[in-house]
Image (tube, rainbow, N blue to C red):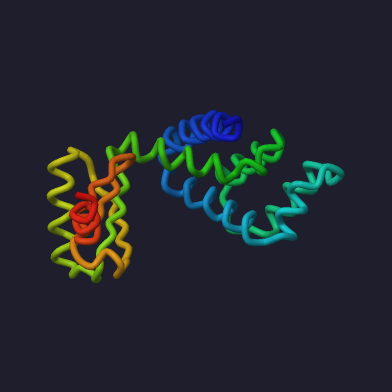
Length: 174
């Protein structure tokens, strides 16, 4: 809970700076790159988390690891290092993405089907969901042959289960 609050506070501040500079997408990519490196590389994680390594050394290390980051991106990373918040990068990135989606009227939809749908079917589903929600749809498709046929949609916190497996389970309970 505290991590989410911290993540949201820093994500809002970073998003405001990025929006002011017209660099929202680039800053997200930077934060995401830092997060992936932090989560996947134990040496990187240990160095930026080590309490005895100075903040200046941490900044220099990050600049060497990511030489292509521009001044704005490095300023944001330096800020997180100064505040000892690079350790909260996962919650910051998650909250930043939530803010981006909210400001741009985008909703994540996870669709699970027994078989891979065609591109035309995906496009048709996206169009129908955009009409239903009034927002842009970011569709992720998963395949699960155990649902037999039909599909399951997860739109935010709402789940619509139209799978044959679910219908059969309902029949068995009656």
